[in-house]
Amino acid sequence: MIAYFLLVHRFPAQFKRLFSAIYAPGNQYVVHVDKRSGKKLSDDISQFLAPYQGVEMLASQDALWGGYSLVEAELRGMARLLEMDHRWTHYINLSGQDFPLKSQSYIRQFVAAHPGKQFIRAVDQRKLRPDTLNRIDHVFHEANGVIEDTQIGRTFLTGDTPFIGTQWKLVTRGFCEYVRNDPAVERFKKFYRNSFIADEAFFQTVLMNSRGQGVVMNDDLRMIDWVPDGDIKLRPRNYDITDLAELQRSKDLFARKFDAESDTEILSLLEEHLRTPSANIYQAPAITVKLQADLRQDVLIAA
Image (cartoon, rainbow, N blue to C red; front, side, top):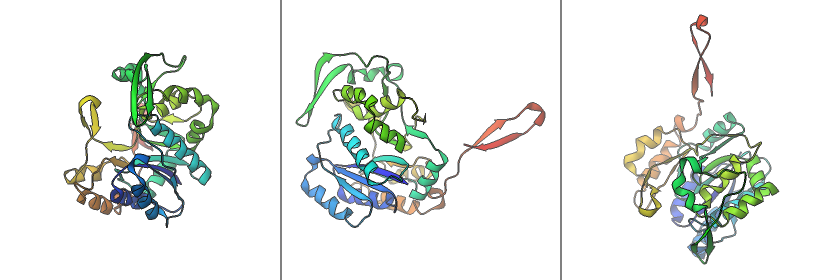
């Protein structure tokens, strides 16, 4: 079974379509609505979710882009999901503007075929993303909906390596228990609480600097089209009807992001796609392995 944590801050009608597309009995769901989005949005979503089993609303707090508050919200979500049910094996986080490309049956088949693997993008920040080191080599403060760069310099944690990726992940229950509860993680929490865009680095850094957490796949299983956007440099482009064929062919589990107010037809067509065999039957890719030369043949091994 799968545990889902969903972050929502607008577009309630679109969230409802997303939730309907990912809901399956036995799965567990925790939804967090950004406190700054207002009580009306929170009440609307709470009323919508009331008939569903295995679903809870997390107490709303500010969840500011770029702030550690996003990490805190997710850690609280993990904690509640761990308390709700002991049977789920994998955790997925989503935003209200994501949408599945595969059914829950497919996703359950997928995780069963990849035990112990952590699907999260993670690269050495110093070697491959040095342009982002300013996010961690200064002290940042988050307060009253604002993130302030104090310009106070600092060094990274001694003996550890900073990693970076995206906010999105499919990870094991074991990692959720570790990152939420293990005292060894406290030093990372303390450090990243005063960083910028911690949600794209905290979980990666904990995972890559810890033993016994399985194989990291450097893949978040999301189809995302990153486009230039000023000082932020990159942002996810909204998919529309012109992207349908590519979305249908994708091997990723989810895509982001969508704006149903500008193109609702794409979601309708993806809802139809979720009923097709390609979105419901997982087939492990075959890997060709060369045998000894005297055998003169190849063998296909399921990955």
